[in-house]
Structure formats: structure tokens, C-alpha cells
Length: 120
Image 1 (cartoon, rainbow, N blue to C red):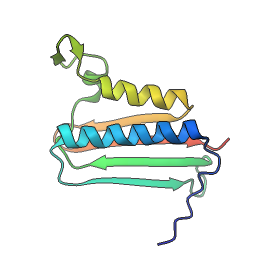
Image 2: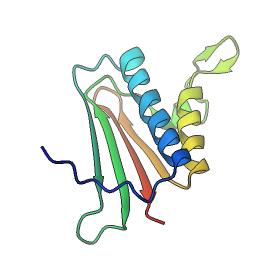
Image 3: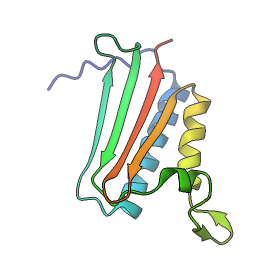
Image 4: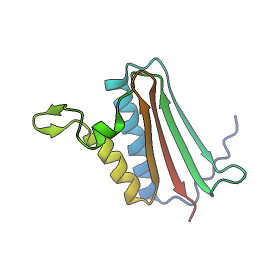
């Protein structure tokens, strides 16, 4: 398969942060999701989409309430720290490189993460 995904507009910092976001995503899938399958799709824009790099990571795991985790309303804590530190770290990394980051998850239905880095 020929990979013609254009990443030429990314600098080393962009690449490292995107890698770390994907790494943390898969770490969370392994640790928490009980997923049977996880998929990553990396592509450039299509047709009328904004020009850039699109990354989609999804799993068929147990899912979770993202808002409760993100805003600390889940009632879960580990040694006084919030359980959602990994999610916050991914969001911060995306912000550092000017990328959009979103999480969609439903309990019992899995999780989808979307990262979009605009072409400069």
C-alpha cells in the first residue's frame, strides 16, 4: 500500500506531540477500555475539509463519561489526584501545537479521539 499522507507542514515539535497523544490514547485503551479492537486512521483533508492532518483513534471498549472525567465529577480519585490526568495531558499537547482535540465516548460503546492539525 502506498502512503501518500502529507506531513511536510509538521515540524519536529508537532510530530513529537502528535506521537505522544497517540501513545497515551493507546495506553488508555490497553489499561482501561477492555477493547477487543482499536483503530487509528491518519489522513489529509478530503474534498471540502479544511487542509491539514486528521487523526482518528477509536476502540470498541467499555467507554466512559468524558465530561465527568474531564471536569472531575466522576467521583474517582487516585491518591487525591484526578483520574483524568492522561486526558488533560493529551488536550494540553494538542493546544501546544495548535491542534484541535476532541473525545467522544459513551459508556458501553467505546471511545473515539479526533486530532486535527491545520496545514500552515
